[in-house]
Every structure is written in C-alpha cells, then in structure tokens.
Image 1 (cartoon, rainbow over the protein chains, first blue to last red):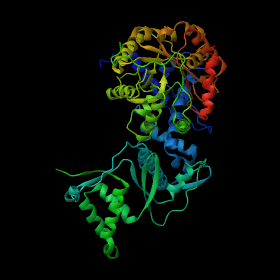
Image 2 (image 1 turned 90 degrees about the vertical axis):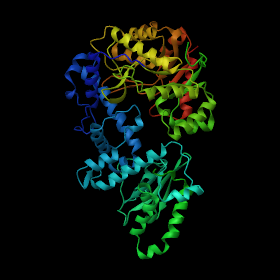
Image 3 (image 1 turned 30 degrees about the vertical axis):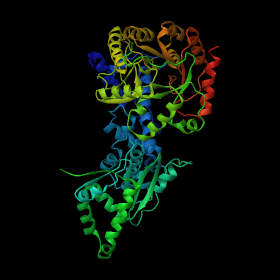
Image 4 (image 1 turned 180 degrees about the vertical axis):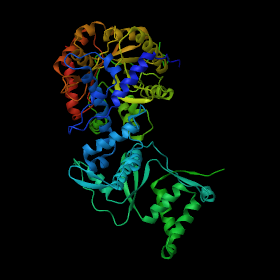
Length: 296
Length: 276
C-alpha cells in the first residue's frame, strides 16, 4: 500500500499536540488539573481562541482526557494495586509510569504492560506512605499486588489453548524436553494475603478507597491461576509442587527434577518420587501445559 | 465495485447499539430485538478468548458492523499492515455490511494517544486523507465510512469549514459518511456554527449510518463528547432533521457510566419517535 506522506507542518503540529497531551496533570490543588503553562507555545499560537475559553483551556480538555482515560484503564487492569494505595496515590504511580512509558500501540490492552516491573524498579523506598489513611505500605507488597493483577489480566485475555497431553512416545523425550506453560495459566506467589484481598476488591461489592493489606504471611504461599471457560480460578499449591512447576517452566524436565531433588530434605526425599508423579499428573489433568519442546 | 463482492446491507430504518462488555450478560440472556449491533473493531482484533467467545454468539443473532478507533488516518505513518489485514479479516468474519473509523489522527511520532484528535481543515489535507481513505476502502473490500469528530479546538490555519473538509474527503475518496449528529452538535456549540449548515453539506446518498450519543458540559464550559448520558433533545432534533433528508441506519453509543441494557434500549427506542 503506497500511503501518501503527511506534510512537514502537520508533523510538527502533531508533535507539539502530543507534548501537550502528555503534560502531566498537576496535583498541587488536591485535584488533578491541567498545567497549561507548560504547553508548547507554537501549539498555542496555532489554536484559535474559544468563545469563552482561552486556547490553553480548550487544549486542556484533551490533556485531561488523555490522562483520565489512561488512569481509568490502569485502575481497571490493576484493581488490587489501586485498592491498596487508593485512587489518588495510584494515579500518581500511574502518571510516573506513563511519563516513562507512554502508550505506543493502538491496542489499549497493552497500556499496562510492564507496570509491575516499573514499580519494582522505580519505587525508591522499602515502604512508602499512603494517604489517607496515613500508613506505610511495603513496596514489595505493592509490586506483588501489581504482578498478581497483571497475571489475572494476561490469563483472562489469553487465546484459546489446546492443552498438551503427553502421548506414549513422548515418554522417551520427556526428560530432555521443556514444558511450556499455557498462557491461560499463571503461577502466583504471595507474601501477604493478596489473592483473597483481590477477590474482595473485584467482588460484587467492591472496596472503595485504600484497603488494608493484612499481616505478612509466615511463609510465602503459592497458587495456580487458571481459566476455565470464561471464569478464573485459583488452586492452592504445596510449596514443593509450586517449586517443581516453576523449575519446569525454566528447565528441561530432567534438570527440573534434579534441582528439585537437590533442594529437598532427607525426609522429603523418601516420598518425592510418588509426589512428583502426583503433581505432574495433576498438572497435565489441569491442562496447564501448552507444549513440550525438545531441542534438535 | 467492492473487491469482496456485494456486502450485505442494513435497512434504512435499522436501529442498533454499540456492543459493550458491560452488557454481555444481559444481552446473552435476553437477546432483545435489535436490528444490528456495532462493535469497536480493536476490541476483537486480538486472539484473546473472551471477546471472540462473545462475538461468536452475538453474530449468530444480529448483523454486526465494525467501528474503529485506531486507524489514525491523519497520522504520520501508514497503518501497520497487520492492523488493516486484521480489520479486513474481522469484517469478513462477521460479514460486516460496512466498516467505519474516524476522520482524525490518534497518534504520531511513535506515540499512541488513544484519542480522536483534530487537524486544521485545509485543501492540502483533503487530498491527502482522501487518497488514504480510498486505499483503506480498497484494502477492506467493502464500504468504508469516515466519522466526523467532536472537537474542542480550531486551528488558525483552517481555510475550510469542518463540513467542507469532511464532504470534500468523502467525495474525493469515493468512500462514505458515518455521520455522528451528536458530534455535529458538540462542535457547533464549542465553535459557534449552525448545525443545519453542516447537514446541508452532506450528501445523504453516501451516509452509511447515523450515530447518536450523550455528552457533558465540563466546568470550563466546553461540551465534551462523553457518551455517558442520554441523548439531549437538541441532538434528537438534529437527528430528526438528518432523517428527514434521508433515513439511514441509526446507532446509539453509550460508553461511560453505562446503565443496564434495558435503559440503553429505551433510549434507542426514542429514535423511532424522531423519525416520524
């Protein structure tokens, strides 16, 4: 397709318009408001005065729409994260993220890609303050919450997948092959009771404002998140079972089994072969694998 | 005329609603009487299971037309080839009578702004966008309509009225109007023109569909195309004026603060009263 090129003046106008759109909203007044003083002068000069508003006030409509659309989208995609910090604080975090990584795809579903990693890499403190109510939230909990939200989004939006079921002739190559996790499945780990909190947050009576985190768990807990039809479900995993599934996603089956064995106590090793059989059989029965890949 | 053969058509008095996920459950439980539904193309271009599941059920009950928000026909870069291929595939999949998108730009210089943004209205851009629209229609192989915008700014550079620009593009491209009368009203209030003058410029033989929706006046006094309210009487009156020129399939959009389906259907039912 031979797409005719835009004139240079239009490209310049669109560049300035884009800068205006991405100008972060001010929080100084306690509400989110457009900071029109930073709009590109060239754009202001090209914009006609409104009947009752200045050029800047007219442009501010687009500026506000840009941010509120994206904030809303991220609030919907990360409901647990938003509930933990409250919408005011969440929008601030979203703003940092969107300034660093403005949307580049036509696909709105992609806007939140990388949000959890961004929080992990950029939140500066071990704890940060959430207002109101005035309290501190561990950064690790927030990152964990964002990862859980992202997993829910990805699993729900996964394509239809035909689960991998090993055939008899797969047995010989199983040890050297690597099992690929279905995109309709995710392995979750929580150090706070976040999965239960998320269930409440997105339930029929959603929690508004910032929500209590609950006490840190004595040991991290693992879950299998999967899609059945159009519904999502969580299955609790034994810690060793979770470890096995994670190792299987990163290694050949043989290597995963060897590494699991190396991590077990003497007492665990006594029953490990039967348990591994049980866990593997369950994973296949649940349809969590998409394929077995064997190198050439 | 169209490379995919003769597309199905909607009756001129067909009335439909924009399909929104908030209504999936009610819709699939009750299958209310609707002449057609319109889907946002981009919501169904991916391979995610849930949208496709619902689309498959809906297409068994209603004709479906496609309405895009991501073509970016006035943007600097050509659309991603796979994007247009997927829209064409989706149109074939649902056997859409037509496909529409907006006469606007939505991103530039690698950024996607996810908004429908205006340009100056000048003859140079009529030529440019007409050529592009003709390419899109050819690629899709079925009627392609361009929707007029709600806008909140005008540019000093403009030498054409919005309706002159719009009508010029459609005539030169050989494509179609997807006429949004709420957008005409919103822009007329924001920029101070007479909406009837806008309608005068439209060749109704090339109008594929007429959109109606609600809007909101923001604190600055600007009217914003929010699609979060019932349609105001002034927009219904403009709709009546459009229908008197030539009846065309009608579509009610409701995208924010979405009420129960029954309320949306009750709002749509008003369209019949304004056609008499």
